[in-house]
Length: 134
Image 1 (cartoon, helix red, strand yellow):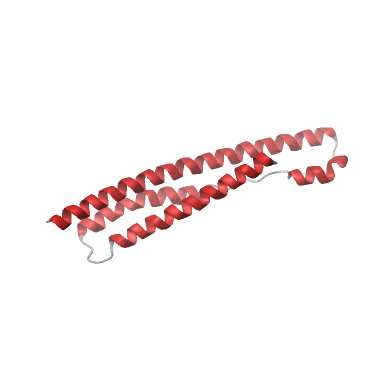
Image 2 (cartoon, helix red, strand yellow; image 1 turned 30 degrees about the vertical axis):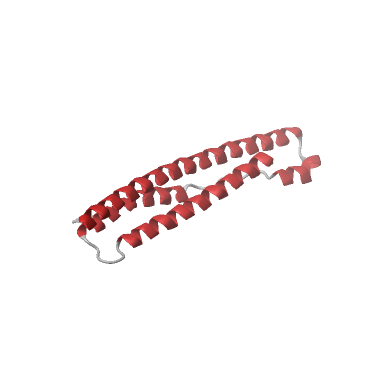
């Protein structure tokens, strides 16, 4: 039960980080068009579509479920035959592994989105600095 709760908390923390980075990427796109949009600034702003797509794919990752719940095992334990209880515990183990893989996928996508946001921001800043020097 503790393992399942930790994995659920991990998923919630990943979702919060993804949301924060998504808000940042959308803000970067908005700031790219803040005053006078030049073809150069508009083109570099398109770089933010890469992390935006990765972040959306991280959000599209399905959430796992715990089946059966540990509470139901505790409540109805005397009524379960041993074979059913064994199957229930195995199902819980499978769901824990599934949730772990789901959160690992979200973590990888968040890492890619963070790195691509950093690269896009660096390119945008350098290009804006170059345009400002002209």
